[in-house]
Every structure is written in structure tokens, then in C-alpha cells.
Length: 339
Image (cartoon, rainbow, N blue to C red):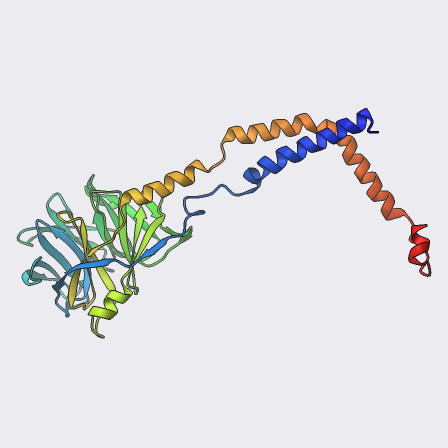
């Protein structure tokens, strides 16, 4: 027969076990981030159209504006800015930089074209129609990629795992830094950038690789990876270098892609949208435990703790007594131990 005290102890133990088995995983586990439950999906884009590209162009930046391709090419002594026919790939206008500049990424802001340089800490402003230089500006660090957002802010990359946001009114001041994370780990060598106005994603290629990642501007998390390895192997020659050109075409909602010394531009469908990335972030946020759950767990533990003390003391006493008991003589048989 169970005594009243024993019943209270048993009930208190059962209650404690129930509550802690139910809620303790929420307390003991780390609060999940936007990538704790999401593996970056790797996608091979679909080629929609192929356009010829100058195989001598060491592509560093690419964009589409007013149905024209704008391309920045690099290397000291070979850097240029070009306007290209989007249907034929023919170079319609070209401006060569002087030998001391290594040209990098480009962006359009207020109908002016911005071109970065690699280590020279200077950017050039051009008239987007004539390619006449209308100004310049300075900035700290290396210049790699650049893209403009719908509110005329600019994202700059420098080859690291962070990108910086600057105002188009004062290019030298950074408003914000964003750490880019792939499956919750920083990803290095971010290069050419593209920021379609239709969504809040940043597209970046990885230096020395044939892949592009789409990035949430709010969190820095990579949503999807687009692998161009097979496309390059199928269509490009052995003299081609890595992918390094991303341009969004608003008229078709497709992307124009090329690379250093590639023989073609590729109009491709990424088959994923900004909405896909948003859904992933919202689902994960809903799984985060609320502060109310923590408060309930603590309150229950405080209330039930006094009832469980006698049980804990009894268990501790029995364990201590067992440890202090003398073991049977070495010659004792199993039967003698049972008796």
C-alpha cells in the first residue's frame, strides 16, 4: 500500500518528468537561425538563349540598361567600358581606361554609370549614353563588385565575406555591413553583384568558381546556389576563365550571364524567385520558442521543486549507502550473495 507521502512524491515526480520532457528541448536547444533547418538548394539554370561574346574580354562587371548590355573589362592596360548590342553581341561603343587602372564592377544610378577600380581606390561616373566621364569619387579598400538598389543605395563587394552599403550621394561612407552566410557559415570571395529592383535579393558570383548565390538583403543568408559548371563545360572553350558577369533583364525576368574570356553570353532562367526565399525565412521564425514558454517552465519548476526535495534526498541517501556498504568476500558464490 502506498502511503500518502509516497503518493505525493510519486505524483510530483510524474509532473516534473512530464513538464521537463515536454518543454526542456525548447530550453536546451539553440534558437534556430534562418538556416538551421534549411540546406541551400543547388540549381542548374536553364539556358534560354545564347548570344556571342568577345572572347578577349576579361569581364569584371555586367548590366542591362535601356535594352543595351553594359560591360566592364579588366586587367592593367586592357580595361574598358563597353555598350553592346543585346541581340548580336556586337560592341557598339567602347572607352578604354588608362594603363594604371584595373576596371571592376559597374552599376547604374540616376542614369549615370558607375565603374569601380580594383586597388586604385577610385570610381568613375559616366554618361550612360555617350560613356563620357562626368565625375569620379574615392573609397576605402579594394573595389570588386557593385550594384544599385531600388532606393538608389549601393552595395559594394571587396572579395571578403562582407558587403557594404553606401549612399549614392556620398560613396565613401558605409551605411551598413552585411555578413553573407552559406548554411550559417560565412562565405568568402564575393565578387560581381546584381540587385534586381523587382525583389530584395542580391546575386553574387564567387571568385574563381562557376557559381552564383542569391542572398537575402535582410539577413545575409544565401537562399539558393546556381551552378554553371556544366554550362561552361558544354559551351565554352578551354581558354575561358571563371564566371564573372551577372545582369538582370527586366523585360524577360531572366538573367544574362558570362565570364572572363567566355565566347558567349547566356540568357538563363534561375527557376527560383524572391518569394521562395521569403517562405523559408517565415517558416523558421515561427518555430522559435516564445518568452512566455520560458516563463511557464521556470514557474512550474519553482512550484514543484519543494515537493520533489524528499524524493531527491531519499535517492541520494540510498546511493550513498550502497557506495559505503562492504562488498562480499571474494570467495562468496552467487548463491551465497542472493541469500
